[in-house]
Amino acid sequence: NYEAQSALAQAAEAGFYAAQVSVTAETARNYFDLRGYQQRLEVARRNADNQAESVRITQARLDAGRGTQLDVSRAQAQLSATLATIPDFEAAVTRSMLRLGVLTGHSPESLFATLQPTRALPALPETYSIGTPESLLRRRPDIRVAERQLAAATAGIGIAVADLFPRISFVGSWGFDAVASSDLGKASSETYAFGPSISWAAFDLGRVHQRIKQREAAADGALAEYQKTVLQALEETDASLTTYAKSRIKQQRLQDSATASADAARLARARFDSGAADFLTVLDAERTVLEAEDQLAQSQTQTATALLAMYKALGGGFRPLPESASR
Image (cartoon, rainbow, N blue to C red; front, side, top):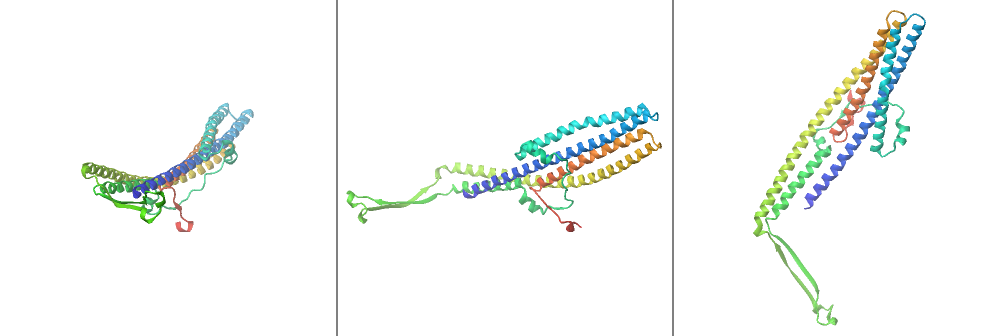
């Protein structure tokens, strides 16, 4: 049946598109992971440099008779703890780069020159158009697969029902029939036959009815699968939109926290240099900066990953709105 075969072919095509969406999203996710780990590595190294300066200052104060060994030991302990996080980040960067090589079909060496420099994550859209639920149903490849499989199943019912009726076809033949070879090709030697051919499962209608029931059951199952796929798609879309929106809010608040922590650290260092605060205040401020900046880097990666989840939930894309349209 052409209708059923066409529906199955379209389902296979939609399945191929679904695989493309998954590979694209997985590649982007690993790229975001790579940039996120690179940012966390940079945060750790930058804070380690600041903490190393604190060790130098406390040691100089101790040598000058104005500091204590306790301050030096505390500064060194904090520096060592920060340095201990760096190998893990370096390993994570390497793993992400190797994974990207597999997904893109490139060797790690060819990716190294391009991806090794630390760069910020791509700017994410603040506003976007997701269209209507109807457009979502047309975009999602898994819904398209389920819908085409349902179409193939319902077409199968028609095929089975057709077996209840006789099939009539007409067959014919034409040629030459002569006793002597010299008569071949003459009009008198022409022969032809024409007549109907009838086939009917009249004595096996029970089996035909059974096939109809089987096809109807298959169609019911395909319909249930289609309904489940649609509901799951709507759920995933709603959840991904909510997660992305909340991730952006969290990221902004962590950005504010990181900025305030950096300001507090500068003030604490200035007060320590002037003798208005002890070194423990500086250590606490530096620790807070490291934690805030690391949490911000993680949040930026999580927000980008949430955007990818929304990309998949919307069937492989959405349209960011122009800036003027979002006002």
